[in-house]
Image (cartoon, rainbow over all chains, first blue to last red; front, side):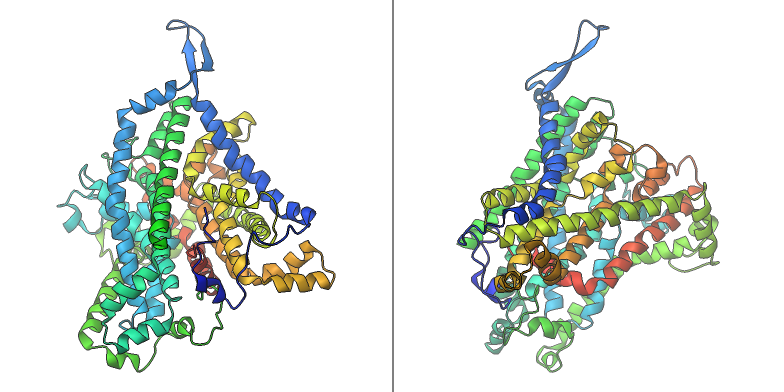
Length: 313
Length: 306
């Protein structure tokens, strides 16, 4: 990927330094220093990223064989046996479908709110920007597990302080619980995404919108036609991380299992992985992990390429 | 971009102006109605974002009976100190042990991760060497691999070497941050001038000394950002402790509270402990973010420069 090369021409110049030209410099001949800098991360990356991925793939290709019903179990190479099981596993695909529906609704809502707040903070309409910026960001400091516990109490008919609402609306019932969880995730991450977009907005030159104001453009018009196009890279970054996060959903629904019987042990793909591995059926669980990682990679990478192409046009 | 480094380009004072909050005279031009509408939206969502935390604070200060019996959004008899003491002493200080564990996992993990990511990102930005682009692309691929997909294979690998259910099981995978490398590279490319490195070389400083003495200082906002976000990522990590740890004395605080919360039906007394513990567990993160916001707000924008 060419993340750095896709920098807008003004971006590095704005830092007050000449733009670096990576790749064009001579090899520097600082081999030992480079090794010193790169090797520690490189070795650990191999050990705790590359090796586990390879090991997951390898494990997923094995299968346990038994001689008759009570014979000794042997682990043998099974080729794609586990993947056949993955593709015929209804619970897994139901959970994948569930997080996709979740993501299609929750990610746009969350990022839409984040963008709206960032634009409002960036407009002359709002006073007390510092306060709002902090107040909206505070939930990000609340870990997902804790946020889920808090909202779980607030939703729960037995525990909630707001019984008038929770007694009449089954927020933890089979139909609504997924959106109850979506609200928890939104609550935690809107402020974080808002800040990323907001700091990109601060880099939009002031002259541009001032000129637009003199031309009689409204704030809405300026936001729509000038600011949003200029911060699209930031928005697509937040979108990618949100997509990854959605497919990985685990902590919040796992916590909700103690508040709602509608959340099953295979509610999300990662919960399926965990449930399968504690059976224990590590080979199938590894295959789930591999499929999930691949799907996440394809989705987020595809989204990245899509937005880059649009930006280049 | 300009937000990330204190841009000294003439005319681009927007970041500075926004930091100074209000720009008098501007508001005169905008009519009252849009301003009122905007403020209303912001106020409503302030309630949405802060009310649950306010409720938690209030609930944590009540006795177990009062939590359900009194106004949920205002204090009854204040028992916060008693409640906190009860949580801290419950089962020989299990909760403080969890807090200490979390601080260890997140503090040490993020510190080492930041150092490693900074060195690697700096080398990728400032030296031309063979395989550089390959390394960077592999690291970027690592950013897109969901961390939870690694939890299960890590568990299988760690159980081969008998390292599950140890501190290492959570700590070691936490010190690798591909996103940190990505951020460090972008930031080093933009904020460490080549001339400065040349000058240090002419002065006879070695490459490594130049990095620790000069370059790393220029990268401070990025380093604080990497540290904070890795700290949060470790503090919030759920799958790794879930799959690795059995001994409750080694739990991080979020996972411990999850365990208590899932026992609520059997042990209702835990109700107050869960609420008070939740409140206590978010304090370190809120403090860290508020104390360091001067640094991370600058670094946050760097990630979006793509």
